[in-house]
Length: 330
Image 1 (tube, rainbow, N blue to C red):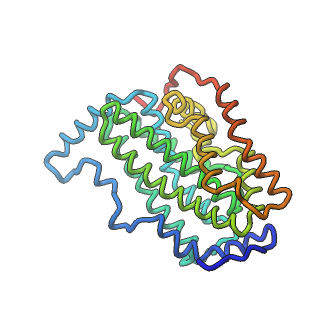
Image 2 (cartoon, helix red, strand yellow):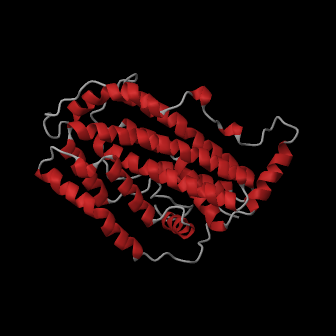
Image 3 (spheres, one colour):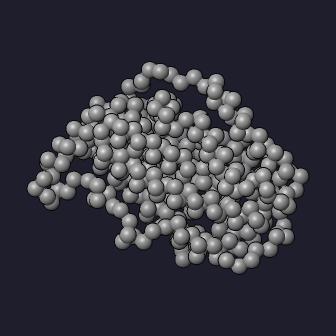
């Protein structure tokens, strides 16, 4: 990549995005895989063309019977989140100051990222359908609502805030899918464990891409990136499914119960939120960034103190012990 000037005017997002276009065009492909080399949902699911199809479904359902209720609820919430992909793609195409040329680096990345992510919902949706434990119509209502409702994640169209959010969120989905994989294996569902494991691997790879983008932006516009990071953490990183609801509920009606189930299981907790923040602080070398203006220095000070503060809050959190009865699950 070309050498980037270090004297860009503060807040000059468009100039920074122009300088980063070669990275978006060339180096982002390092975080993608050739289509022919990637796993597809059919690699894991019963094949209707085989004589053993119905036997495979019976085996799948027998394993799914052993999954704890909360784990099924979290799996459904994760799947609904993955199925709301149209919202995320449209949001990424609205980011300002990036090259919107269809063959430019940003638009090519968005399409490739979407194509890889699309496999996640396809795989988990089919698993839930075949498992026999799910009221699929209620599940599908939640998916339609989440796409219809969209989300409000506090990034606006600012590229720095968007890529800070995606860095955090891809790491969070990696944690969630990885933990569901481990719990599924413990419950005897090795197929589901394998599915969630490969999805988690995709999420980790995508996180590295967005984190790399912020690392590059931090070199040429450190103060503005630091201020954007502080702003996102003050607002709190909300989950993309924070409007999650079941039929007959207002926006977000099911999200708190889904979050409680994840906390009870240890799938995704307040401590994980802090750990992800720490990972970003380390990866972006926040304590070593130079060339900050006064506001940037204050933002850095806030960010460096934040993990300890959030851990104290996490220690005081009370999670309901009682399972919530979701309409999704028979």
